[in-house]
Length: 272
Image (cartoon, one colour):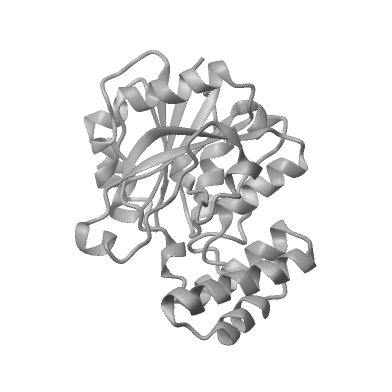
């Protein structure tokens, strides 16, 4: 069983990618999808010896949109398992072993894990700690834990989910999409569930990375509020999405002194 680490980066982010690679091992491969505006930069990167390793494949693409970048990688999948990553992710052999052993033990199509948060201390104090479930369970059950949500770098997919389930990221959602700035992980999982795929949560760490997700900017960025409402409407029946928007607004009103009516109206006004 082989694990393919898919790293998506844009522009100068490619310069950080070599820090991700571990010594070669037979059951781990790397796929890099690099969004660039100037094709001439390709020759500069090709000169880096690390990209000539036999376990590394590098692809380029034009344009914007993180979900487009991730899909550019997914359509080129060769591993039995895909680990979704970014250029600020860092791994260990123990993390890779956690993923492979879990897939050998569990009959699942998508498995969500935990991250080790490298967020700077001064920022960490301003963001609520992410509450993970304590045991293995279905994704639906995990979502009952207050405050839990999936991040892309915690996400792994089987090749079956990609090829048979035709699972990919909805390009209306995600950074640079031009429509909704976040929510792509929840939307992908909802699409997988609609296909009858099994989605699980496993309480094991698989990545070191700063948890600076777009969703943490909910109060300061109306685009995040709009995307949150769009995600609720995509993933749930209209009546349930309405309730979830109100619950979200009331939570921030109680704990952060926000205007609940204003937040709800911003989330609900989307046509999604």
